[in-house]
Structure formats: structure tokens, C-alpha cells
Length: 86
Image 1 (cartoon, one colour):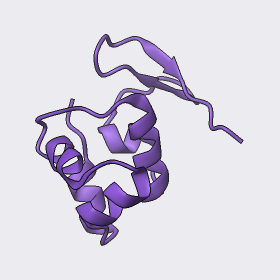
Image 2: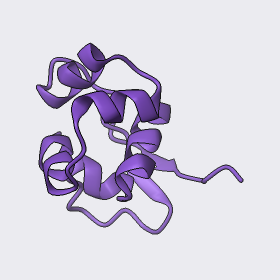
Image 3: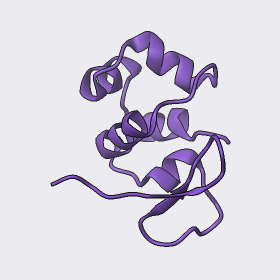
């Protein structure tokens, strides 16, 4: 899986520090995610997508259509239903 995080952050002029603050994780954690040393939890991924105003599919570079409201789990490949909390 190829996260598009660096490209999206650059396009939106969002720094690692700002993303870390808005998502509630450390700058080191953001750096590790950007460089591929770690992968964010689904909750963190959802927060990042929300802060960057993109879909999770866009963020993870998902090219295969999985259906509205679903993504593929980066770990097991199964469909995960995405619901935004009100």
C-alpha cells in the first residue's frame, strides 16, 4: 500500500507539525507514517483524511473501487465499512 500522505500534505500546504497537532499524534509518528516506517490505525487514518479534506481511499491511494462507504484493510485486504460519527 502506498499512502499519498506526503503528496496530499504538500498540495494543501499542511506541515507535519500541523497534521500531528490536529490529529492528536506526535510529529515523529507523522514522520514514520509518511516514510512508510509505520502505518496508522484506522482511527488515525480517518482523522488524517478529515484534516486533509480527502477520502480515505484518496489518502491510501486506493485504485480499486470497493463500493461507497468501504475501504480495503491495509493489513488483511478485507472490506471495512466506513461511517462518520456525528
